[in-house]
Image 1: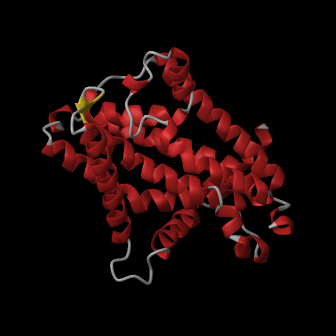
Image 2 (image 1 turned 120 degrees about the vertical axis):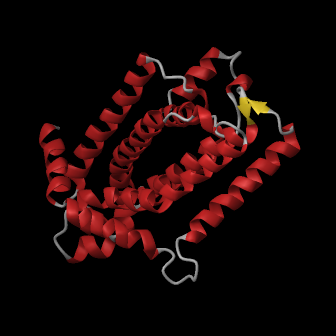
Length: 267
């Protein structure tokens, strides 16, 4: 296990310039042939956000969710979710989709998931300005906590790096697992407090515990703390989050180290 962790870290450190260069190339690859380029991403996000807000207002009115305006609540959950969802989709299949690189040259394979996550982050980073705009409009900008924002941004990145390192290895060697993963992804949005609030489950402590057991929920709560509430997570919950993240990184390093020799044969 320790050998695998040391190997993965050393590959990332020694190839950090290549990693950033590939991330910048991947960032523009999807929209290379369009006139608006990367701005299509922000237009898509705005459209999805508008649809979710319209659905919320039509179903429940434009009131508050867990003590904050519903639009602010939705925005502070959906913008991080758009990044996370893209990482979960594209990052998990990053090794499988880079078959040509794996089969043709000797390449530090363990950096491929990190390249994908970095590219998606750089591409979507300006979309977090949407949250600032909404908070200013609804009068919440005075509640902004920059240190909390930076902290939870790092938490989100490290969690996504660790999770992608783990999932991309298994999906690269199993098509069935990939199909199951895609099926699970389609319902994940509705299992987390992104478009709904805690008041709907607060009378069910066991369900509340299950929901918070997902480390991604720590991220969504964190961004709402950074932009609106300023409430710090408990030390116990923070320790749980970092424990999950470290375990995911260790397991991801181990499976990447063990399976890297077989990618070219099974993909």
